[in-house]
Length: 229
Image 1: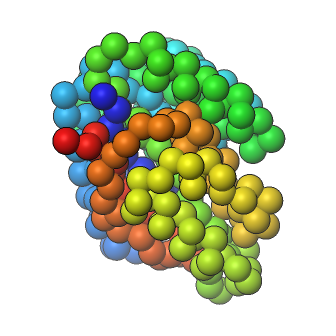
Image 2: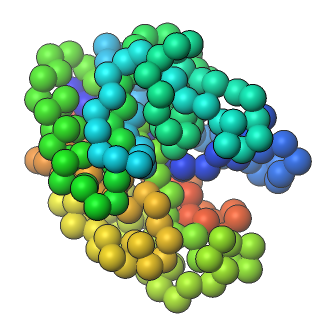
């Protein structure tokens, strides 16, 4: 049994990083935490899937630092194996959701999605009990004058394809996302979503997209996939 929470790769979700930014972040934090909490129901193991410098499986205990954002904050298990800040967002949300068990991480590098998908598939195949995936990923970063990429034509169409796949719990559509187009619209999450879709393969889920918007010109989505009854 696999349960999946999709949350934004937004460091501003972490209050220490997001100081001074829009109050609307509270809503995104609440929705993301609720999605993770729902994914944790009845599971004995958690795997975060997030962007990284190389595709790899990191078994727990793990830890991440936000020092790159000028914040003296470490999340996860003290002294744990180091993972990137993208996975750190998942670790922070797990803490907010009350998870105290060990966590593993699959990091996804854009040029080796197949390796990450294989690593995730191996974890899923070995899991004998309930498992939660926390998928940390962003869509395009070119949806307005405040966006890192300013305005990039085609951003909305790419994000719409992601939302459609999430809403349908369609693993094949996630796995077949156009990664070249994802790179063009500055979606760091495209390889992550593709790896998750490929890793989950033929599993069937009921899906709910709870929030999808571009508050800072970067596309965020919160969704939950739960096993079909």
